[in-house]
Length: 157
Image 1: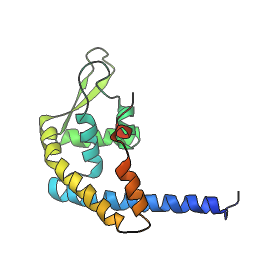
Image 2: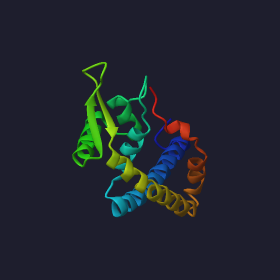
Image 3: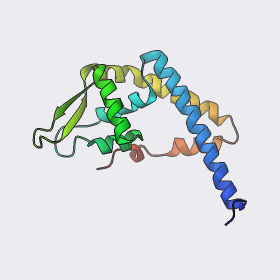
């Protein structure tokens, strides 16, 4: 295949459209979360992922799992955890069975903020998708997003 191969051009065009859709959605949600709750998209995502943990075997996520779930490097995830911990939205503690392991849990204040922010996030996502659906180049991608099963987003162990 050459750089001008139609298959490569189609792939590049598809990736460009997906990137545009992602950027528009993220920017729309970011503005809504910042204005309404003082949260970034990444902060909201981290609170959401951590709020889904449970006690018991396999209930707590390792930092690598959290980083994968919020699509950040481990170091960026650690910095994000620290920022939210400084705001009182998260708490870290040692694993009771392995003193080398550190768990991160959403605090009561973090859970309350997440609960308040969830409708804002959901409404902003719906608005961004509805707006993108009016663009003929993005409409097929919107349909694809709307058809994805939520299990894809669940953290894997």
